[in-house]
Length: 328
Image (spheres, one colour):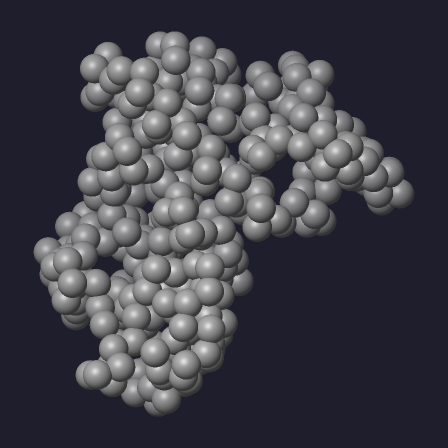
């Protein structure tokens, strides 16, 4: 899709419906670099890089002062930090307004934006994993046919704990696991297949970005309603060719020598090459698990299994999962 930027007159190949002109918007962002700071030069640089390279309005981040949020409410606590919901009055930038010579924001168009604030414990000292999670999330978002990966709008900082926080879209219905607990017996087949279809699209976008989610389950699929679902939580996401994955695969199958790692990984890559000549758009992996949950009892997969059963007692099952690229 090629649309003309009204500012510079050049064609834009952005898939964004708001005609996101990368050169013009990068210039507008750069002109405002001196008007804000997170107080951390590393975070400032990271946010600025996303603004300069963004091809649509969901591939960039903003520094969002914490005082712009209202009605901050605690939601839950996980292994990595706490999660809150809040209201962001003006919301995120979605285009440049030529007449006003300023950014247009979602709140001006549609009203208050509900967001989730996800903190990391002790993140006053920021680590690379924080950036890796956001980078993977931004890379996986495809706006052309409606994004199926949860958008990350920016970064803020809790003034009380000093922890940095990711600012993301809030899902009113919560996780798929929570949604099924409440609604499983009232869902018809159209609704179930709609959820599955959106989940498959999200997996496809992640895999097309050259990534593997590695933590895919009903708790990391969130719903806004039964016709609108997204994949979230990219904390364990890695490129499919990462050395960490090579090590993990080798460890599962007793491959401890570095030469054996390479030989083992060559076999996996050979399977990948075969799949390119016998293509399927989405790996059966997590989609099979979600499908089973939706079709059968609504219970979580492996609910009766001890957590170590799969790795310790069923190596053949794990091997079959790897061969079919069941690791998502």
